[in-house]
Every structure is written in C-alpha cells, then in structure tokens.
Length: 110
Length: 246
Image (cartoon, rainbow over all chains, first blue to last red; front, side):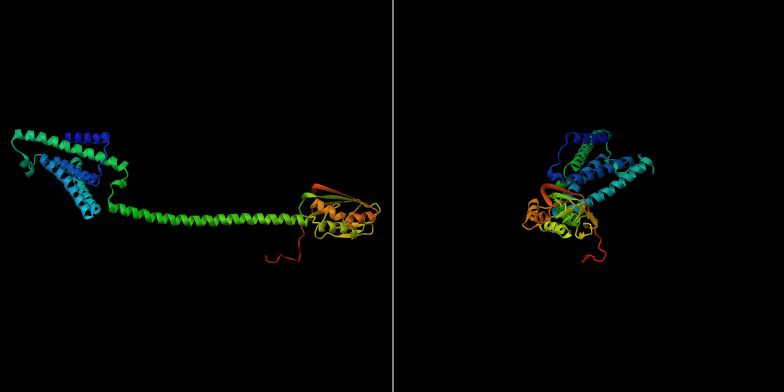
C-alpha cells in the first residue's frame, strides 16, 4: 500500500517538476526504468506468494537498475550498445511477462 | 500459501523488536525506491513524448537513420523529376494544341475572307459608277475589279455580288451579268483595302475613271475608314482536287 502511494507520489512529482533528463543519463534511464519495473513485478509476485522479503526486494531493485545501466554502458563502449539494450529489454520483458502471469494466476486463479 | 515457510522468509526473520524497526526502515527504503521509479517513469514518458527522439539516439542508430533518410530523399527526388518531366510533357502538348488551333483558326479566317464565305469589314472605298447610256461592257467592269485587285483590295463587292475567285462578268444581250446576277447601273462597288492606294489606282491616267468618263458616265469615289461587306459566297467544294499532303 505504502509502495503504491510512493509510486503515485513519484509520478506526480515527475509531472509537476517536469525535469529534463541530463544528456549523460539519457541512454540509461529507459533501461533502468524497465529493470526497476522487473524488480517491482518480482516484488509483487513474491508478496502474493507470501515470500516477500524487504531486503531482497531492495537489493534486487538496486542491483537490477545498476546491472542494466552497466550492461548498456559496456555495450556503448564496445560499440554494440543498441543491440545490447535490445537484449536487456527482451530479457527483462520476458521476466516481467512471467511475473505478470504469476500475479494473474494469484489474482484471478486463472 | 502465506503460511508456507520459505528459506528466504525464515532467513530474513529475526527477533521481533529489531525486525519491526528494520521493517520500518525497509518500508521507507522501498517507498523511496518506488517514488524514484515513478519519478523516472514520468520523466521518461515526458521526454519521450515531447523532446526530439533523435536527441537520445546512439551514433550507430543516427547513422542508420541518416542513411534511410538519404535513400528516401533519393527516391523522392527521382519521383519529383519523373513527375516534373510528365508535367512538362503534358503542358507542352497542351500549349502545342492551343497554338495549332489558333493557327488553324487564323488560316480559316483568312481563307474565309478571301473566298468570300465570311462577312468582312475594314477601311476601303465606296465607288459609284453612273452609266446612263449602258456603255460599259463586261470588259470595262472587269477592269474596275482588276484595278482594285491590283491595288491590293482584299474584299470586293460589286453591286449585290461578292467577288470571289470564280467570279465572272458576262455580256448578255441586255446588259452585263456577274455570276449569273443581272447588273443594273448605277453600279456600287465596295472594296476593302488601303483607301489611298485604291482610289489612286482608279484615278490612274487611262484607267477606270477615264474609261467611265469616255463612256459618258460619272464615277464617284469615297474613301471611308470603315466599309462593311456582309454579302457572302457559298464555300466552294472542290469535286476533283484534294489537297496534297493530307
């Protein structure tokens, strides 16, 4: 509940303050957001499974974001940034889908 | 399911009191993280929808996009030149048609005036020939027409008859007929051409004026800025000759 409220507050802050993304952050922010979403879906699933642990969530959230950003950074340095970002998005997308399916099974028993 | 113990859950568990404080701290941390996520989401949505998408693109992507755009430009420019050529072609043929039609109309007008199939008006002279003794024969009347033609008369009306290419004066027993129309003096002749030249041609020494006077007649020449000739001739239809090259 608190988490959902915090999410809404964050969105509202982003809408109200209308900050511009710094140039150096621009390639990483979308990937980081997707990685964070993956962590959030995983957290929700764990909550529904009854195995939610705050420490695990926080660590997985932060590490997901950092690893995603690191992969993109490495890809950029290696000259395969575009492909690697795609790969990261695909993998995270699959994970999000899997978690979403598990959540759906919990919520709708289907 | 919530009662099912899991290794992670038990591992995270501890004494009740510290766990509660840790839980509170963890909740705050999670809240902060999710607030950051929401913030980043909103920012990213906005920057993606508002700012130029190319600003955040990578060099390789930019190069590919540029290549795409360049080939697209080439393709479109090819289309442009094709279409412009087609337009040029069409407008050329259009103006050619107009020019050809205008030229044909011009020729038709000129020929209609010359063959006498159309009314005509313009500067010219009006000649009245009074011949009380009927002394003027077809030859003298033909001289009038010849003289006018020689002076550049473009359209001539003799009495009630328009002079055409096939006009002929004929002596009949009682007088003169022109194209099977009986002529009766006084004769009125209308001619379109340069009035000065026409009247000079008639007044020439030993010319028409002298001839008429010698025949005991009177002749009166009036130069007019507008002569209107409304009598027409039927368009001659050649029975044997066809234009060459058609």
